[in-house]
Amino acid sequence: MEKQNTFTNEENCSSEQLESYFFNPNWDNSMNQNDPFESAFSSMAASNGIIGDNIVVRELIGRTGNSQEMSMLDHQIAQGNFPINGNRFSSPPSSAPFPADPGFADRAARFSCFANKNLGAMNAQLGSNEAELPHRSATNLEPGKISSYQSFKISSCDKKLGCLSISSTPEKAEFCESRENSSISEQIPAREVGTNDANDRKRKAVLRGKAKAIPSSNSANISSENSGSSSKRSKPGDDKCSEPPKDYIHVRARRGQATDAHSLAERVRREKIGERMKFLQDLVPGCNKVTGKAVMLDEIINYVQSLQRQVEFLSMKLANVNPTMDFNMQALLSKDMFQSRGAIHDELQLLDTYPFQCQQGPNLHSVIPSRIDAFPTNYFNDATGRNQSKQQLSVDNLVSTVWEDDLHSLVQMGNGQNQTQSFHGILPTAQTKAER
Amino acid sequence: MKTHNQLPSSHSLVESRFAYLFLKALKELNKNRPSSPSIRDTYRRYNLIRVSAYGLMASAVRPRRAWSRATLWKIRNRTFLRALMKRSRTRSLTRRVPARGNPKKGLGCKLVKDLRKLVPGGEEMKFCRLLNETSHYMKCLQAQVQIMRNIVDHYST
Image 1: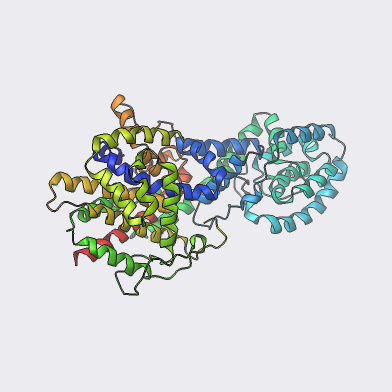
Image 2 (image 1 turned 180 degrees about the vertical axis):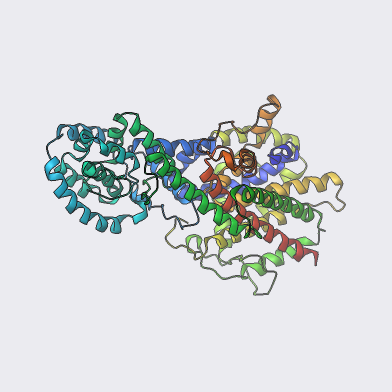
């Protein structure tokens, strides 16, 4: 990135001080809210590729693993996905059930024991379960979140698998009750597997026979046990589940269309990508008439490049503004504090130390008055805790003074005098931060 | 946003946060401005402002999106990355993991690669995710440009 190239300036050390000062408190702020996030996040920050891998792995395994990290990652990923549909696939953190691995192993063993036992009773039960399912899904998950049965449809072709998975409906009953929140998506694949034989249609499409409470990992294990066909199908399932980490996508095979797993997966994928391209089209101005993904991508790239160039140009302009800005900045801040209304409840901590004047100023995109309070306190609390080496010089200032002064001291440190010293100080600090 | 007391428009929250942070940063940066700035000083300030613009936007977004995480990580580890770069100039700073899940060869792999380079952290995402991140990144960039333009206009008058 060009950012990287420009970072080689020696001034970067100073900017890094400044930026770290800004970043750490914010990070700590968010991390304080979500402690497990920190552990997950550090690993994520180290390699962004982990996110994708985790999703894939998670899909393969089903929902095994009771690690809180996984749920946190899920939450992160779910939050970060797909703004279009308002996170249709996202689910509350509580509904990210990851039963423990040993539990799955036990259940898997138990299920296999029940092979061929309840096959007859299955269909009847499946019917009843089906009735229950919508209710459950309504209560627990959105309909769209119901697992994709792709990986399991395959296995449904196999009678043995059906028996294996459907087996022990009484077991399922237990599990259903025990894991109501999470389990629906898990149950569904199991049920799907159960109904197979009667219909050669793609199970993917239909919510048939909801055999209860087979953990999705169990089903996943079963499907993985199968021959290559099942493994192939689980892959499309993985692809589809890249966005909603916990659930499988329900795909309906349309009339007259190919119904094998690959094409279904491809279709879903294409639809997803198409949806996002449409959303991007709305974002990019003047792209309403553009058709075709390639042209659209080109426009998007140009637009992002132009935006980045604009940012750089404006920052250059800001760097050249005359020093009389200082006074204006104060006024600007005070003006904008009351500029827009908005209830930021999540960060509302009433601080009334800042005297405000209600004036009409430039519309700076909803700067909200109550927000000032959150930052100074956070900065202080976090800054003093974290950057020991860097802020040794300014720790006193930080603790004792208002937010302007501590920033001021930091910038002083960064801007000029002790560049070499600060550089040495920054380097180990940066290293430690990277390790964190 | 994760919190229960969710704003009606979470993006305005991000914008206000960024505006606030950026104004503060600008204020601090301008406090030490020498009376007659040399080109070098101006360039330095420009660099600082630019980095802070990107970084503060990422901070305002919180590490919730992949691109904000990538940006913050890059800024945090700039010295480390710089050393890495010096050590091996030929090697790219970002890990060259071939992005899986990108079957859209017909779409133009080159275009997708360019997009990956543009969006921070986009090197290792699947294509679907890349589009997500791009849309969010674009929205934030738009807001950032708007805010900065407002600031410049305010101070130039």
